[in-house]
Amino acid sequence: MESHADHARTFDVVIIGSGAAGLTAALALGETLKVAVLAKGGLTGGSTAWAQGGIAAVLDEGDTFEEHIRDTVIAGAGLNRRETVELVVERAPHAIRRLVDLGVPFNTEGNALHLTREGGHSHRRIVHVNDATGHAVQQALLRAAEANPNITLLPGRSCIDLITGRHEQRYSGSGRVWGVYALNEETGHVEAFTARATVLATGGAGRVYQFSTAPRGATGDGISMAWRAGARVSNMEMMQFHPTCLYNLEVKNFLITEAVRGEGGRLVNPRTGKRFMAFYDPDRMELAPRDVVARAIDSEIKRFGLDYVHLDISHQPEAFVKEHFPNIYEKLLTLGIDMTREPIPVVPAQHYTCGGVVIDLDGRTDLPGLYAAGECTESGLHGANRLASNSLLECFVFGEAAAAHILSHWTAFDAPPSVMPWDESRVSEPDEEVVIKQNWTEIRRFMWNYVGIVRTTKRLERAMHRIQLLNTEVEEYYRHFRVSTDLIELRNLLQSADLIVRSALKRHESRGLHYTLNFPQTDDEPVDTILVP
Ligand code: FAD
Ligand code: SIN
Image (cartoon, rainbow, N blue to C red):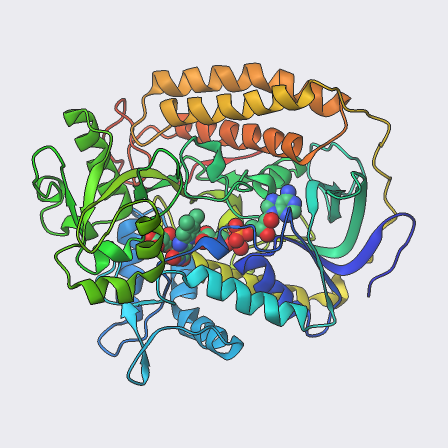
């Protein structure tokens, strides 16, 4: 139950993140335990609310678990862990049923759920709510969490660092996790939240790149907090670029769902007027896995000196396009593009963080008392490249798995000790904000230019050099000045960049999302890139 021992607020379980993973865990735990859900900014600020295409699950009679597993492993270029893929795929139909019970209004066709198709899937198996699935899912989960008196929702808390066995504020080394220190964004004070178990559900690190479809807060906070506390992270070089982000000078991160290609959309070179996927993957064409399509677009753009390529679905009937993609249609109309009549200019942009905190099948990290679920983890599901619409699914399966493990081992969890209060004596410098902004921009630019879709060792080394220079500066701010959300995020952005580049430098082959001109071959044996603190 919640208590106020010392200055800390104590709950049974503290969950960091209010997206699909965090709220799924909260709903399962909240049946019997007192749970706090902390979120940076608002409760719907993560990627979950932005998801478009849908959720993959074997629901069609002609489809099989084995085929969903095979598609996941093909997309993942063999780096997936088979036992994880089996677990997630086999639990998918149950996850969808739970969402239906929570009131998610999935599209239907007759008595069945309508299934759309996306790249890398050999069957139609994506359930969806038009082209705005994430919004409907986020709202349903939030409604259920708000209705549960055991769940305390605490938005406006920017978590800074995990509270570990040594009770230090800045910690390096491994130890039991007892909760987290969080900046109250309204009061400006740092609060301590302690618990017997802590669940990280903080999403990805996409904002480390200049162009990303991810929301502003995707700064790798959970991955960085876990790393600083002593947990291993793996496969951070596997940053996924979505092939089709809208190219627009004002709107920089609007996704055009893969379902547009699933429903017949064609990729065309605006200079030649030709479909170019025939040149790169003649069998799968536009429905090849994301890494293949993103590299093909990148190559066309570079070879022809283009700003973008075209995604064209205007050959489909107008009513069909409007019915399947009502939100995208409306959004594009406001920008002067009628997708029922003309092609959409698109470019690849960072979209998903395949690597993250290492977890087992119960969502356990290396650190006692610390669990993790969703995009901040590396569970073994995605391997070297995530299959479309497998991500929300992973959140539901691992949110539940972590909760189930906590519940079934509850009597073994000790009560948290009293912890040291945060040092509030530091002050803010007036010019601090402008320097923080500049560092944000610098990181995102060099990551885009040096650690993008096609890499070289030289460019990776250049990026690492800049990371090292910035690191001294950022640590200095962090030690001397009052923490702000921007500073917390900058520190984590830099930490994430460091983990990505270090992992990329370790992989001496090209596989899935990691493509380097220095090692274009794929090794026979797939090996995880595991970083140990
Ligand atoms: P998120 O939903 O990102 O939530 C993270 C939570 O952590 C937020 O509440 C945030 O406030 C909180 N947080 C982060 N840092 C801190 C901190 N320091 N302190 C406190 N709280 C913190 N996947 C699919 O399967 N299907 C799709 O159709 C699909 N479409 C997508 C479309 C877009 C545009 C994007 C960006 C992604 C899409 N994805 C899709 C991916 C999928 O949406 C995400 O991987 C998934 O929603 C991640 O859920 P999560 O719960 O792990 O994290
Ligand atoms: C999309 O709708 O294209 C995104 C799907 C995903 O990221 O899985």
